[in-house]
Amino acid sequence: MTLDVDTLFDQIVAPGNGRERGPMRPERLLSVRERQSRRLAAHTFRAFDLVAIVGISVTCASAASTSTLTHMTLAVAAPFVIGALLYARLLRGLGLYRFGRSEVGVGHIARTIVAAMLVVPIMALVEYWLVDDTRVLRAVVAWFVVCGGSVAVLHAVWSAFVGRWRRQGWLTPNVVVVGATAHAQDLIGDAIAQRNMNVIGVFDDRRERSPFAVLGVPVLGDTEALLSHKIVPFLDLIVIAVDPAASARVRELTARLSVLPNKVTLIFEDGQVHGDTRGASRAAAISQITDAPLAPINSSVDDDRRAVAKRAQDLLFGLPILILAAPVMAAAALAVRLDSPGPIFFRQRRHGFNNEEITVWKFRTMRQDAADAKAERQVTANDDRVTRVGRILRKTSLDELPQLFNVLNGEMSLVGPRPHAIGMKTGDVESARLVAEYAHRHRIKPGMTGWAAVNGSRGPLHGADEVGRRVALDVEYIDRQSFLFDLRIMAVTVPGMLGDRGAIR
Image (cartoon, rainbow, N blue to C red; front, side, top):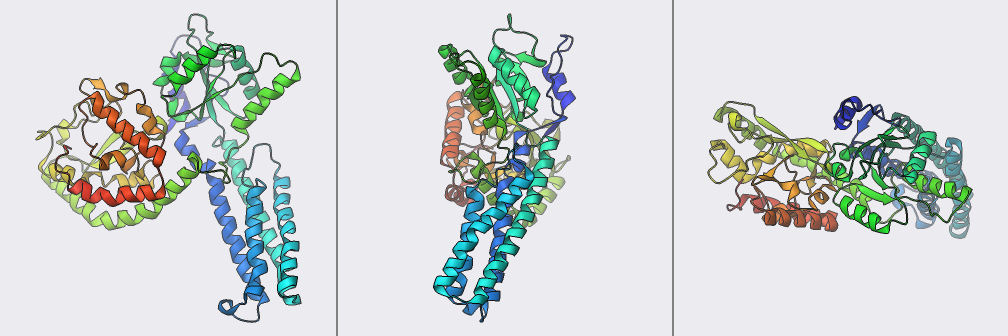
């Protein structure tokens, strides 16, 4: 979702209060999900590098062999296999997929060549021990020239991409600061000077004492306002900037903000530190936020690596499923059209990743005049709003098939917490207000099916206990998510949905 920045700030800054909109506003605001694709590009870059390294290694090994590729001896192949493995490992180990803000392009490219130079002596030693053939040695030299040069060219291209994304703001983190303190002023001052992050606004509970702005960055409200603010889907980080002596206040703020899906960090300076060390400490903390624009590929399993794997999984399975489901979808669309007047599809605004508002597609199952886009009245048994075809589609969950387009578009996943309508009510109360951890289910993309759905928590919710159970199952899924777990959920989805006659949808 992309919002015009002026429109957004018209919403979040009260008119007539004389406050400026902030010196670090981006030309356009992009949601965390939209910018995530650029942050995760390191994995794509590495995949291209691996293809190039393997292809060149196979070619050089074939040139060194007197027989065909299938009859090549292990002794001839060994130097190139070892060279490919070592070079790929060195590129990762030397941090050549970080593309940090402070890196110099020429230096980065030079390091790719140096990495290849470090591998060549090892390849030559392996060749000497196993083969001792000048033909193979010449192929090793050719490998260095072609492979090292090709990877250097690729990294020059990758650097150009990253530089362009940085100039366009795709890699600049959006931050809000909690606490209009001297620490916040120092942080904002450094950010203005370096232009390495966008401090969108400040939130402070001391409204009677807080200024209208901190170095031009507007104070947008108190902590309670932040919990339901329209800016949340655009934030990479929430920074708590408080007096380090106020430990009780720190614990209180951390607990209150923990209900949000956004990352929260604490930044302050030790009051016992004096002189330039304080500035260096703050600069180091800011560098951790801003100087690694691309997600690391050499870390343990984390949110970034999971996002890459989930996206690959969605594309791998989503497109074939869409092709196979196309005849069923065409028949369902025709049935909806013939059954009742109105559009074939029903579009509804729902919560996505990081509280982002997304438009979810479904086949229309209700009369057009009874459409309930905000889900203020949940579906009941024998609901008179549901059409004849709609009852069949809901009973079989075929009305959800158009969400495959949301999956391929990157707004949803095949497996994840089911997306709820914005403002959905349980009884007379908005569902999100019934469970403190409700927003935790938005820390991953919503899914067409999920752990809660296959465990019977699907359809309308009738009380706080049912909302709590669904949130608990969704959070459990997020904690347990893996490729095999997703396969398990997908495997039981179809028989579970088609055989579930007790669920009201």
